[in-house]
Length: 502
Ligand SMILES: [Mn+2]
Image 1: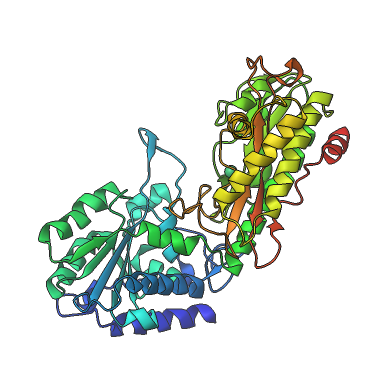
Image 2: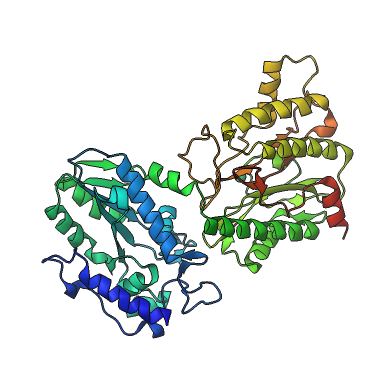
């Protein structure tokens, strides 16, 4: 019985850890009834075997994977302090997200903070992860990880459902110890007394949790026992930008769910449909396939509204002869997809639509080929502008006599956004990783060129005005050819017309 073994093993680890110093005795450890009967505050193998397998913390991700992420974090952090003798100890603090409220008592959908989730897989709000390391951790990656979580509270749980509690959290995540979150100040005060000149690793630039930031970290800052504060954001992004085998598999599933949903949405659309109905259909089809929710408010733009890049109002009627641009993706067990397709609501492209569409598609397919170690995303963007300029010239949208530099400016005018971003747990993933860096295997990126011709651009032939097109796929970078993860989502004119004729 894996479960019982795990429990016994955990108790031994809890009692033997060296952090159980005089002021921090074993009486602090919460012992509860046998876990077999309890519920956790998140899906677990015991309660949701259809989602989580034995040995996993979140669907598809094992206890070992989370542990190795923390080891990697510690090693890469300590590398930056290599050789500096006075920096023996390192303390990492990662708060979870808190619940946000739309109005009195009405919460927004909870989404866990990405870095916190990446490091421990714990899904409850108002929790905090502490990682303790010392200079030896540089080679071994050894560390202690301690979770502080909302305490069990029968009255609260009656309304909001079960909490894992400290013991449940430790069993779920395999961290070295877990305590009630109201004990975190005492714990850190103790650490502060025992250590001097330690490095405090914390995202102080954009504090994740206002209360922990002022109450818990604020106290450490005042005491000034630490040597310096180092921001964790860049460190986390440099880890997260590379996807493991398990993560790639989750990403692939997320992309396949969205791709299949796109097909159903295209078939469902017809003249006079409301953009809101298209949105609802996408949401429905993604959830029906197991996604938790859409990864972002989708762009569902009929006709010239496609020229508003972040159009999310989605409340207009789409008329016969217009196209729908839908930019949508889902979140599947913490991993996002991000696709865009543009299709004629009637099922048939007009000649002008087809010309602009094929120009966009050509540029997109050329850019996908460039997703290799030879290019950075910024270099692919530059290449996109040249390819677009060429296509727009062929169509006469850029006048033939335009000098080359001016052609690039015009291409930029008709596609005012970048061609790509990194993709992962966040839609605009690992934003501090430079897009000037050469791509490397196991990165996942989007490729999303567009052509947007404003309705009032009288320099362009009238048949093209008011048309906006974007085509976006999700691409896995490998050590050879790039892999298009969204290959099952139709994008050729013939494929789309065929699909919509059914
Ligand atoms: Mn995108």
